[in-house]
Image (cartoon, rainbow, N blue to C red; front, top):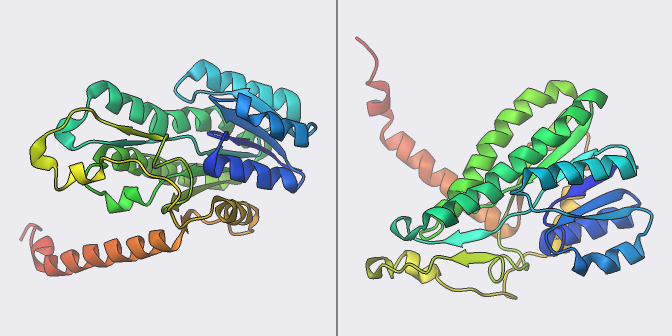
Length: 272
C-alpha cells in the first residue's frame, strides 16, 4: 500500500486521480484550498483518505500538509503536483502581481513541495514525483506566454531533479496533458483586465472562458498516470491526449526543420 499526496485535489484531474487511487486501496492525502467539497470522499474512504487545507503558495501550509500526511500514514510515497491555473494576457498586458502569483503557484509551489518530501524519499531510497505540466509549455499559444513559461520552468526543474534523484531510487515524471474536461478553461483561468487593441487578433482571441467541450477524460488520464507510476520503467515524460500528441509532433517537426535550415550557420561559429 502506497501513500499519495495530491495537490489541487478538489476537482478536475486531481480529484479524478485521488478517487482512482483510493479505489485501488492506497492512501491519499488530498490537498486543496476548497476542502468542503471533499466531504463525500472522506465519507467513502474514511480509513484511506485525509483532506488537508493546502495553498501551495504558502510554505507553512506545505509543511503542515506534509507533516499531517506523515503522522497519518507514515510516509509519502508519491507526490503529485497537480495544483495550478491558467493566466491569459499578451506580454504587454501582463500585470506584475498576477504574473508573480502565476509563478508562485505553478513553479515555486511544486518546487517547495518537492523539497518537503524528498528527505523522506531519500531516507527510504524510494518514491515517485509526478509534476503536471501542459502541452502549452511546448505550443506557447499567443496570450498564454506567462502560463507557458511557468510550465516550461517546471519541466526544466523536473528534468534536472530527475537526474539528481534517480540514483537514489526516486522517479520524476513530467505529465503534459492536452485539453481535458476540467475547470481549467473556466473558473481555473485568470484573464488580465488590461486590453491593448493591437493584440485583438492574437492574444485577444483567447480572452474567453469555456467548459464542457474539451476532448480529454480526466478519469482515463488518472488511470494512465497510476499505470505509469507503477511501471517498472516509469516514464520521465508522459503525454496525455490525442491533441497533446499531435501538438508535440508538429512542434518537434517545425523545430527540426529550422535546425536543418540553419545547420551550416550553426556549424560555422567555431574558431578557424
